[in-house]
Length: 299
Image (cartoon, rainbow, N blue to C red; front, side, top):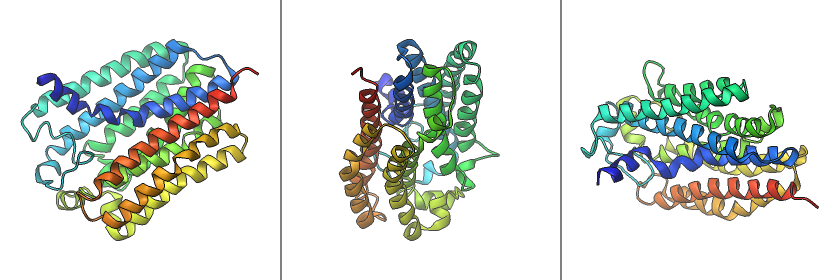
């Protein structure tokens, strides 16, 4: 039973948000270099450890903020609830976060010996995830958290995934993260709607709180559309046309926006749209990566 609680605290299903951009960046590197499985696996472990550490530190920080007063819970928002449900002590969650960060540090130090810029990318990823939740910076309360999420789980990770395979960095690998950056930001954005009242009451002034739900819903729709527009722009800029396989996820996104538009103020009615947003991120990441791998296929 305790193992299940630890797994819940990690919010492991959400790790697709960081793993997919690693895969996409590595798949692009494979177009011009041979795929290096050990480096790819280490990159996934390092990024997933950073992501898990950020999830845990977020739960620890919110345990003294919005989570205790949040009653509009969904399977996708409101935190893991392991602290509020007395599954784990706040100190244990903090220790788990530090263990995840230590794992990321160990992987990062080893990879930095091979690729010197990995250290800088890792530090930037750590800072964006850690400062998102922790005072006095608390980026999520200053209207800066969503932009941090876009870069931390989009361009920064695709650049890193590309770098550990190709051995060098390019602006193309950075911009490659735009579609997934839009989608992971959309995941965070839609999850802020059920939390709106608790966030407002606790002083967590994220952008949804600052804009209000009526206006913020347009941003969600823009983020979902922006993922597919940026995919088209990447291909227009010279990326392989096979990346357009990612457009097959358009019906998922359209359905998510349609459900969200009707139910944005209903924390139960919004749940299918939350699930579809995550599925869209997975589908775009997986299909675009497949397209890049097919583009590198001999013949």
